[in-house]
Image 1 (cartoon, chains in turn blue, brown):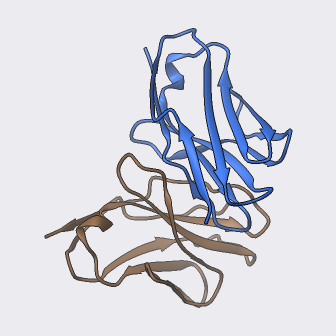
Image 2 (cartoon, each protein chain N blue to C red):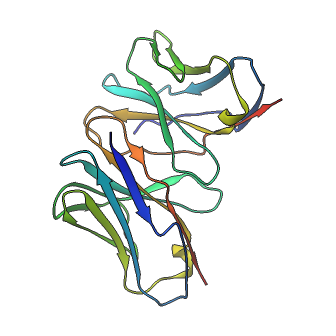
Length: 110
Length: 110
């Protein structure tokens, strides 16, 4: 069966520091991969999606970037965090229509 | 994506059926209705989806009206663990995005 991992589970970072969040999927090949963010008390916002290695589509202009160095690995990065980058970051994967979400990373920028 | 309208919140008694409505009056012919839920501090969980016909799985039933302008998610025997935010999403067949709105906060009470 397929599983999706995200780490770390929680992270506290100062403003201006870099960020790297990692997501890996097991048990499937060539999945579509997604990064979402959920601000406190808000709905989920799609940030990036990828249909293959090195193929990244950005949904909203922002302070973040994404990379897919391997088929089942998706990385969310920032060179300099802003206070507004705080939130709950979720990685998801899909093969067909349904998306399956990871446990998320709660990021607090101080 | 077509927009959806859901009630902000609803309560349900444990052991009773929970009926969650969703309006999607501008849905297009090739757009599906998806339901996800998010338990506090976890990633969203896929529940069910449908196009025209009613659907049932081990978690829930989805009833779509004949004109497809609204639907109802039915949790047949709600438990305390079903307390969550439930999202109704309309999505095209070839569309990668899931656009999450505010959803319905469902509280199951003993």
